[in-house]
Length: 460
Ligand code: TRP
Image 1 (tube, rainbow, N blue to C red):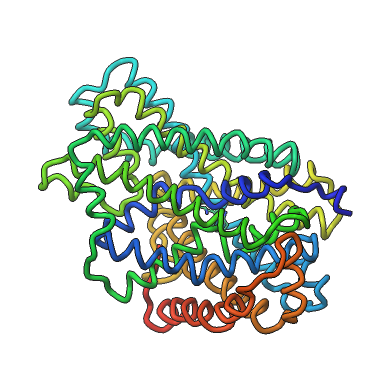
Image 2: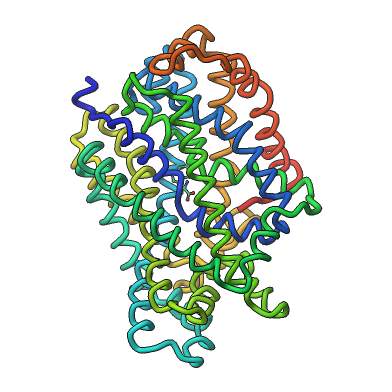
């Protein structure tokens, strides 16, 4: 059985899981969240959220996946808790939804990489700088460009997933993750010479006022960035070998994910703080900041003509190792549950997700009706926004709470202890881990769900 499904090697699991975790969430979402929440204390709260909510749930997901060697729906059936396989169903739907709009943004990085190479060759003059915003708006409004780059990214992702766990996912991530780290390191080192660097570091670590809402945002983001709450890590865990340590691997993935997010902050904040005070407000939570403000900043630096294209490759790679994990969740379900071949599952589901994603691709200006529609009332505008809202505010937190409750309360403690200790040795923190899953994680996430449902807040 194990052989047939494929399995990761030791480093393979860690890099694939880190690849899933490290994505647009780290390089684009986290820096602007930190910026908007005034730095220091937000980072601290986020680190705490990763440690007490993210890490325990990541261990829980791996335990479910590795103990059953099955994808999420089948896993709960194998554990003789068929009712809980709702987690798996929810996960498949979530993977489908997230991938459909994530691939659209990922496609932009390809376009901007090409554009950026052009700027580097032809020169990046003040006229180009002045029209970046308009250019981005125009790009969003071109239906064929939007669908084309989305298609391209789905083709990349499907190609990797077709090759399977070992020769597709593992092979790609073991190449891309070191490259990604190398590029980011170059960017960090270069930014250390910019005039904004000292202030960037101060901003990241100085204490500041923090509101209850930012606390929630930190917890919510911990889910998204660690790929938790929808069975992605259950699925990857099902390909993990029994002689590896679950807690150590999970901790390593959390550390790497956090490190990359902080490095991305250092790069972006150094660029921003090199600007005069009055210009800093340009850096906002808008979706386009990576494509409108950043190129300007890059090309104002020494070596910008190299750094800018490198940056878009970096983001594209980070996105690709995430999209393959989203697609794998959906594909693994059809392979395990319906006995489809990997090729068939990947092609059919990839195409379906692509088709669904067209709605998101066209909803940022290309098609008026899709861009202004408010299917949930005032909560979101346009299909793209609505999908992100549903996934980040509803599906991931609900999935996460169910996973925490399942492993905390339903799965026998002796069972989870045996699985965690296999390949690790005695797990002294088992009691603490169960405590976090039983009380801390559900309360923290429950608070998010409560704020979303009762208070009508939104976090995306
Ligand atoms: N973690 C990725 C990011 O930070 C996104 C992602 C990939 C994801 N797979 C996931 C999010 C599964 C939630 C669930 O960009």
